[in-house]
Image (cartoon, rainbow, N blue to C red; front, side, top):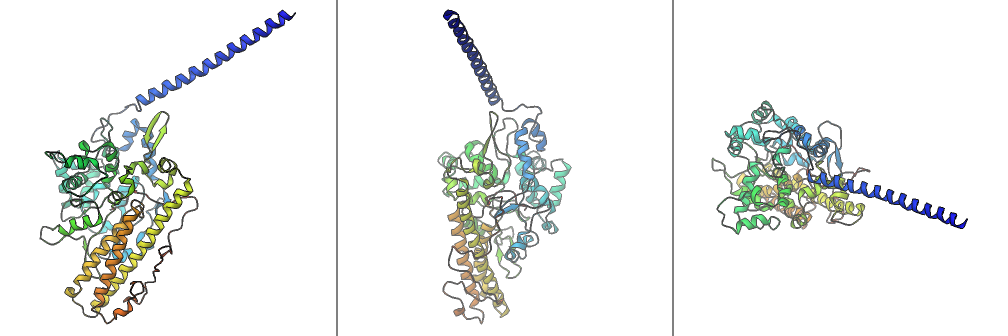
Length: 527
């Protein structure tokens, strides 16, 4: 009896072990199969279903081969909103900045930005918004399409195969001419896959002639560029060939260069070809010196427009995200635009860049916390503090400029000549350039907080100097300007009530939507 029980028990144990072993074998087999499948996916991350080439500008065609990236790109059409930027409204054109901040309208008096200047939207709208802006009611150069459409086939056609030559012709064309040509050729798409990727190898690359000319001028200069080691390496070489960002730059540098093709300061009007002012370096004063040393064909000093009220020759900043980023800690640490605005993500076994280009603060986990191991709220609070401080300082600088304009107009009213006001007008040019540089830059100071504060500090100083210089030719006693230059009753009778406490808001900052974060976006702004 005992023997039979022992035999049954032994049999049950054997069966149990066998079943367990079989189950374990199934699990191991499934795991191995999954590993092999994932490895196979990793070895071949995409299947080329259609051929694409240098003339394939429609992103939908590329999407047949790279559907994950394309699906993410399509999301750039979605409205995103953060405290200090973005477009969170309907599908209509975004809100007017010049209505929210009326000083912008006065600052741009005499320039098309005083007619229409809106919040930015995603890359999917970059061509449409440019075509619809009310600034098109004024003459616009064909150069302006450089950063708003997939233009390389058009450049090659204009240059008989040479894109750089074709690019150089567009400044003399009207925007309507280049836009019609783009549509007629079937390339009326926003900046597309082919603009940043080699269609044969899918390597990232730069294509824009404006950027290539600009980065070559930067390399040929002697300004420090510690965040771009390939330039210093080229400088230390024989320099037999010009610096070529596609040949000489590292892949990590290109992850910033592809964005720097457009998110930069440049001239794009009809007196000379589109120009990046990088010959002296990437700081605000480097660009200022470049423009001051530039002359038009008639020999006159460069300027973007004459201020309608004062007659000052003004420099208009575009959107210098690449330049301000280059002065910050992230650039010095090797962190590029794509790391924050297009962070890596996993799709199965495939590691891809997220092509839903947007503010990192809408994607903190993948954009920020890979390096900064702090709670999300802590990171958002840090950025908010930086941006609010920059916002308040920007508003204070704007008030200083408005006071200067009031003083100049009062002096004109009392008979001051242009020659007498020349020093003040030059200071207006310097102050306004710096204010616009930070106002037009789309990170609200986050890309380089200390640099942004330095620039705005200089702007306030120049505006107040210009105000005092103009008041010398008025009946307004200088004693009405206090030593801190923060309580002058200007020519319009309004007082500048800015406090000297940097922690006190000097203007009402935008409300922070309850369910959303704050902005360091570099999304597209129309020309």
